[in-house]
Image (cartoon, rainbow, N blue to C red):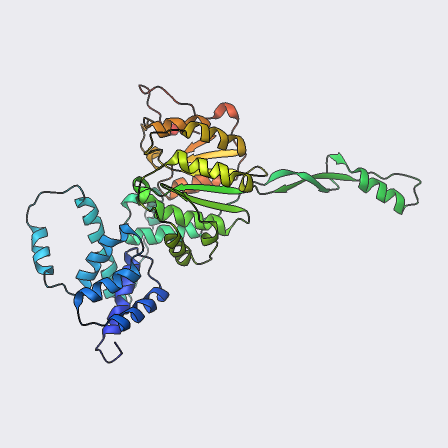
Amino acid sequence: MDASDGRLIENFVYFGRTLRAAGLPVGPGKLLDAVEALRTVGLARRDDFYWTLHSVLVTRRDQRPLFDQAFHLFWRNPQLLERMMGLMLPSFRAPDEPQREEIARRLAEAMAGERGSDDPPVEETEIDAALTWSDRELLQHIDFEKMSAAEEAAAKRAIAALHLAIRPAATRRYRSDPGGSRIDPRGSLRASLRQGGGAIPLRFRERRRRRPPIVVLCDISGSMARYSRMLLHFIHRAAAGHDRFHAFLFGTRLTNATRSLRNRDVDEALAQVSGTVTDWSGGTRIGACLAEFNRLWSRRVLAQGAIVLLITDGIDRDGGEGLAAEMARLRRSCHRLIWLNPLLRWQFYEPKAMGARAILPYVDEFRPVHNLESLADLAEALSKPAASPAARPQVRPRSTPLIAAEVP
């Protein structure tokens, strides 16, 4: 494979850009690896070409349908016309038909963007209309599950610009402060010795204030797959702006992703996370994963008033077995426990799942996490003091709906 093979290299670069625009984390490094792999395997068979690119560019199970459709659309599958004709005929809608339509829409937008990259620029006219919402305001309220590829890209840029002002907390150590509320005995005696010991000028001190550690426990199971990608961008942004930040991902097992998310490039960081985690979009064992966290990591990371962000929908494969005891231990080990649940976007959400009912009594705050507005509200809440124990959410009877607006 060399540059003499027509425009193959150029088309291959366009193919990588299409995948990236459609949502796959394909960077220059992966494209170079794919080119080297193609030089080794060769282009004698179409199947070899397909699976070589698949082995290099696809890192997660949920990326397979997107890559498959992009490959056959971009490289001119002979049966493409039959597929398109079949979409025009009435047919039975399978359970995964909406997902296929969503993938097709994202691919169409990505390929349209590539085709329009060489078009001459068009002058835009701004119109100031009263009583209308801007695109940015509309983007704040769109559910992550319903976003198109362009909207996802805009949401990722908004998350990268999100400012997380964590409220500093008082520590046990003191520092000299002329306006402090406590007398500093050592400082006063030192000042007296410097003046000959005839008088004792008073010196004051105040507690040091430092931002508390942030610990994120994020569910990456199948029920959370549509939100985990965007939430990982938020976790990466939080890790970049905080010196004491720890991130753990869990599905059927617990994975420490702190070191991977320290990478400044978000695409490289998520690629490292994808290579580390082996239980993407699988089941959920919340109780077992929390037990492992409490046994191996809680004493290391939950110190000095740590804040824990538990991101999960509360759906547990084990039916909440042992989850209440682990949640109680986790609550005793941290200063503030916030549960972020994308299902809380529904107005009359009710925690009927056993896992959700086991989690709720031990959390300080219960918040939705399904769009940019919810992430901005979370960032604002972290800059304020924790709610009092009397304001913690309680488990309500199943006959009474739990309204999101009533949850602090």
